[in-house]
Length: 249
Ligand code: 13P
Image 1 (tube, protein in one colour):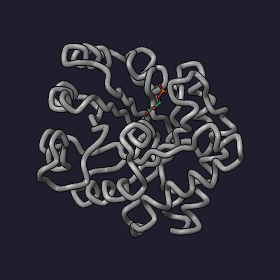
Image 2 (cartoon, helix red, strand yellow):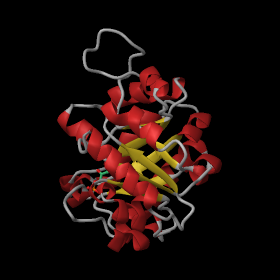
Image 3 (cartoon, rainbow, N blue to C red):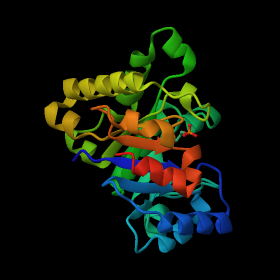
């Protein structure tokens, strides 16, 4: 079912004491919206974060995982390992992983399959680069990213997938897509899903926007009919800002 979600992607920030301090600050905030609240701390702190949020409505999710079930993949983390520390959702396909760790559509398709097979919900990220937008190819780029990593799946798989449109040019730059640009792309994504899977899948799909979402712009972005929430980077590292965004619904 389509939901309002605000997810904080902490990226490679916050060691253990900082993770505990930020969670303690988050737990002091008041939520006035009905949005689902997610935080994605670094992998080494997932277990502590899970325990610290146990009696709250904050869900702790992972930023990444490997596609293999187990084996000789030094430094990697499996779906089963995530499940064993209380994680039920994983972010896959973030543009930083695509750009800095050479994650391709084919690799991401494998990760999606492994996550779903292990009953993990997937937050699947994608988004065009600045030159794609300048040349007017942004819709094609995004459509291909979604098709290549997800369209081998059956319709029922999409119940456990959340989409996150994050234009690369808007991540950490302070430059946000305008609410209209976000709405246009989200609508296009929903149409693409509708063409392939029909109305139920497309209407039920939760589509988040990410890229320089702040307390000052969240309300306008979230007011767009096809924007169901946000994936927040920098502003998720301050409890007050994160909750101001959550309460922007
Ligand atoms: P910023 O909110 O810092 O632009 O980051 C967005 C993002 O990449 C979330 O995954």
